[in-house]
Length: 79
Image (cartoon, rainbow, N blue to C red; front, side):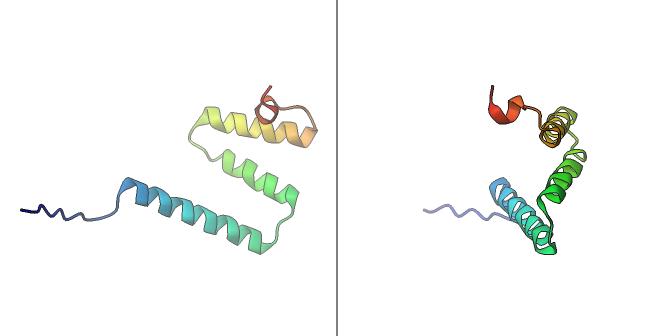
């Protein structure tokens, strides 16, 4: 006797993969638009400020600000 299970919809793993694919397509569209390095950093900064996780947002924007100012960042260097 075999048990057959029908599943409807997609699993969490499949949803996560689809989200990552969509994010990569968005990044590729921006790159295809034609942006320089300073614009990429500004885009990352703007996306960081849209995060719901305020702690993560502050960490990311701090790193970007330090990078722009040429100061040392503990997150990047790991020190």
